[in-house]
Length: 314
Image (cartoon, rainbow, N blue to C red):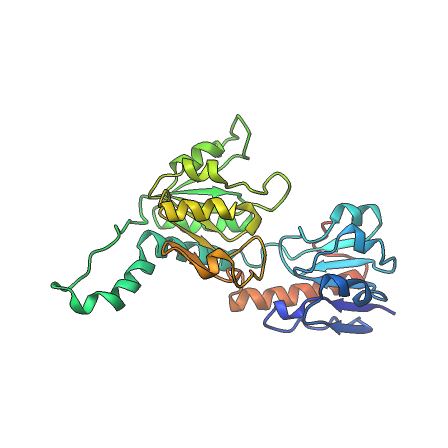
């Protein structure tokens, strides 16, 4: 008799269809670290979006046989431990590629065309303007601009496809630190220094944590912008804050932060510079992507119950 526990069902705005072969199905809106062991004490299967499942917790859950990550990234799960202890792990790859890509393209338009600034000017200065328009921050075209992609998975490829159709020049970055570039790739430092838009689409790992810091921000063009829809820890937030307030780069769009949800006193929540577009980790969450994710989670769990595990990563 299988017991399935969804640790953080509130992270999805639609319900996950209950697999037809399930015996017990428990949904928790969220699960805190100190609640984890009790929540999974008699579970065979865990579904998690962002609740971490690390080795120190997993070794206390000998009954657990399968973890379904309700996301593309699976950095919240200690997959190395799972491989060693016969715990199967699945994810849901590429379900939100179009949703995230469209969010990125929207951010490019907002930042390059200074829509945040001009929205404020419309409210504060338009009625008293001596002429029909109000000139403020320089507006930059999208066509002809250079987009630097850090990461070329399903999302990065979809961003590249749309950007190319818009007339942008696209540079795909080689891994940071590599001294030679593969065909079709450009050295990391060259991408950072020559892009009008730098967009992050790589997974979070020990190698990519703090990928964009003071050094990289200082290399960017003063008219360039940074977009991060991947993982918050890819960017040194203090270095980015300093760069935005110094205006050493023109702007940034962040859909992710190092700690989510952020503290109410987080500097980007309380003191956003005008050049920062902050959204609450929703680039993935178009209606169609959310529905696809919910169905895929259910299908993954059903496949494990039928001993034909889909989308297995461990």
